[in-house]
Figure 1 (cartoon, rainbow over the protein chains, first blue to last red):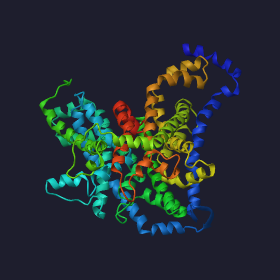
Figure 2 (spheres, chains in turn cyan, green):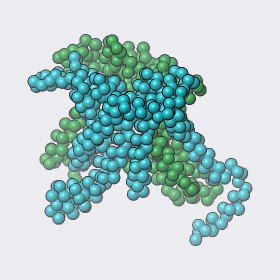
Figure 3 (cartoon, rainbow over the protein chains, first blue to last red):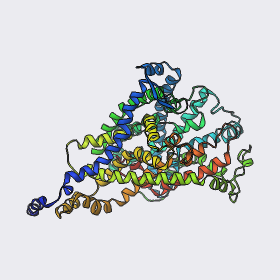
Figure 4 (cartoon, chains in turn red, purple):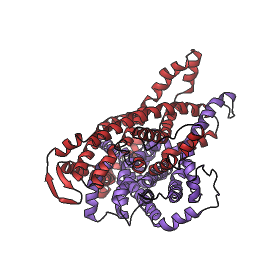
Length: 310
Length: 275
């Protein structure tokens, strides 16, 4: 009631405010620059990429674009290197994310059970370092560690009578190495999310489970997995998006080699555009990457909204 | 509840945690140690385990030869952080506090632009920048870095602005404050620490960026990561430079990990998960 009395005074002052003080104007001024900027960065490039992808065009001579219809797309989808890049990216997403979740869950449980020790927080920060350091440097670190001549990995393996492992030298092993680097770098990310999920479970639920005589796998499937499902799904989506733009590590370690064994989508598009200057083919690849990420994004946005509203 | 002491049943988890922490930091440490070794020791097998930490020649070499690129990185990163925040904070504020038709759709669209892989915008960006004379320039990098981090900045800022009590904002409005004044005098002071977290995250993302700088710069505006990538040439690999430069490059993100620990979960999920 008191509020109503105060509010009654407000409308009388409203007409006195100039247009620039009006709510609508101010809010538009707050939002518009961001939207224009983002549109220039996303919508316009998308339209332009589609245009380029329908033309035979060199990045060094953009004026001489020749319309070729869907040719670039047909060439792409019949190019073994591009198909390899698609396959590798998909494989990387599936295997790396699966391994990350399993390992991250185990470590998260360990961290949660130690959370009464204050100094364990420091250990958690150390554990998280791989996901924070510059991805390019991650590539450099493993070029050094996995180096065939001076690498410490083969030296240590040799010490226990194993190896030498051709980390980046063999087409099968190279992909496994890239996978290992990915898992090393991103397990901390999953761990953080899963730990946040586990910590949100009320301790009386664990207590109730114990009183009811629940086995560990009951606790896992009936309490823990349902509680962390949403947040893990969010993690999966963010990691898929990351994998689609995965570039820095392969760029310095293998450049997609040996042969085509570690080629990934972003590296493929990058090379077509900026090394062979094939802006038409490169743009077609970019459009395909964009469409894949748009499909995933649609799910991601809905999911983030749902978690946000919980 | 739990006592803050080590119990016998903590032993298993502790061994596990220590093992994984070791796996996490050993590769990082190994390259960091190499930064303090002369070239002969870096490539020595069997390895030289502990270097002489007073050997700083590698750092001296990298800093004297490549300092302009470190400065480039700093300018591009700080510039992008400022630009992204100037745009993101008012937008986030309006999206949280102003009820209008299509508000959620607009926020979702902004979020969806975060998901766009930068390679998808690479050629159009390159072409506009070439036309506008922004190729190989710091303003160009600032615009690109700010743009790609803007969606993240808006969303994470929104999550902090939502925590400002509604009563506070309503009270200020009733006293006749304009929205601009509410933002400046109520929301900003209230969410200072949150905004600091957003700024730090944008800083780190921009600082770690590599691919954009690789095709947007050629000489003058090259960033430090681009220079580091060139140490792996076709001929000799400059391990002594790589090691020292990597330590310098990783310093900001590593320090940040320790100081901003409590905001990291909310940072990596764009504010979707509260810290």
